[in-house]
Image (cartoon, rainbow, N blue to C red; front, side, top):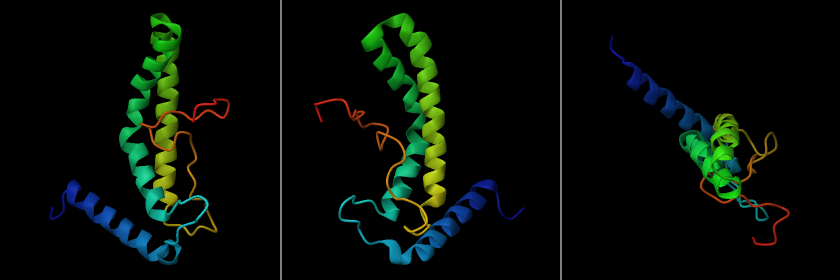
Length: 128
């Protein structure tokens, strides 16, 4: 065959980016109160897809630090897997909806923290 799978993937990715730029051409204005743009949403979605697996060791470490080893093995693992699946689905959703205009979908992050490597900002914490 003339095209292999890698070539097809890059061709589809290029078409998606071109479609995204064309559809949201008037949506590159920065919202002054939130600073969220189409490009930031696309980057956040790609980041969530690529780094979502790190939710598992992050949760294991956090639970181990708070509750000890046995809780880290059980609760930390299951919490990490749940957060990993959630972050992957949110990442796919943000990539797919990033080219849509602001009036149809929000550009704000759907999960907290916005990126996987950021610390969780709890509304009950006084240390921001």
